[in-house]
Length: 113
Length: 112
Image (tube, rainbow over all chains, first blue to last red; front, side, top):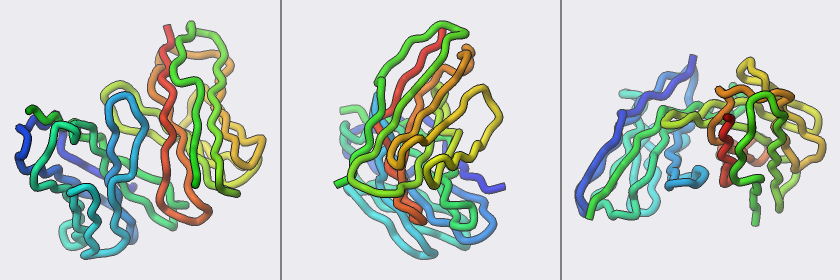
């Protein structure tokens, strides 16, 4: 079946450090890919998305590129802030599956001042 | 603009008691609606989704049920809660036939 695998956390960084969260997927077909962010005690917010190979999604300084050849969608940010502390979820959806989201397990990121 | 509401925000219930969580969406018509559960420290599991009034699909067997009595209302219920039902319940919506889902603030349920 379809699945998403992302690196386990927690990831602890200092402010202004470079952040990478790895995400790989398995899917039958050509999925759309998403990163969602969950701040403490809140629901999920869409961070960015990409709908086809080589697309780059970006938002709030975060970027991720849809790599079909490596079935990956790694999230990056060049300089993190304390306010980026959150849990990040990678997800995919397929039209053939009714656009239901399949999530990875989430990666907790803690940024220290 | 569209907004999604969930209530209650927090709920503490004894084992064996009933449950009703409500989700409503404003500012859109005929949305697809979803219920997810997030167990402590874990990822999200899709429980139910609906593409229209009275149309419910269940993703996992469990003692929970869902209903959609109105176009923009989605209810999650249980007749008798189990300890394992504890978790963070998230409702989401998407425009019809569109892929991006938008999440509500969630309900934290603790079953004791």
